[in-house]
Length: 210
Image (cartoon, rainbow, N blue to C red; front, side, top):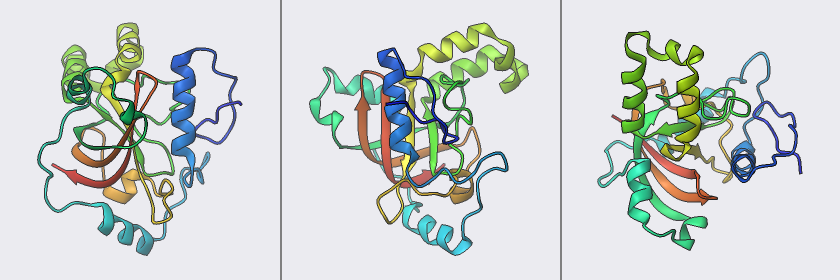
């Protein structure tokens, strides 16, 4: 089956296990959210967005959140239950590193038109910030080292998707739904799935922004 890109078009069949896993991640996050194309995502009904925000936004920070890398380390040998739905509290930054999947996740750290963003382990984000120095995010665009490092550090990233009342990915851009910006530090609550040995996917039901 040809995997679906974030813009709703199909790409060639993935031939490596890593890219196949990413294709599965994309399909999981696709439902309910790909209304926007070249003109950008369609704005949600403000009343609908407000209702969903009230359900998902947490007034107090949950205790015991782990970063993506700490969570993986705590697993030890892979627990088969993680392939299903395991409760998770995850802390990290929205983006903060170059795009590990430039050919498929063209709007990283967002997924246009759906309540999905990519959460990065703070230690990994700090590494890239230190390397970039004063050039900041613009540095990565022309840095082969950053591109290689980002591709090798996908295990420091979690794809976080917030579900609507219908149980599908909410069709409201995460920036609009929560007022998020790249670099924000957040805690998310939900259920984790580990696809293959690399892709951490969270179906989230709560968010706290620090």
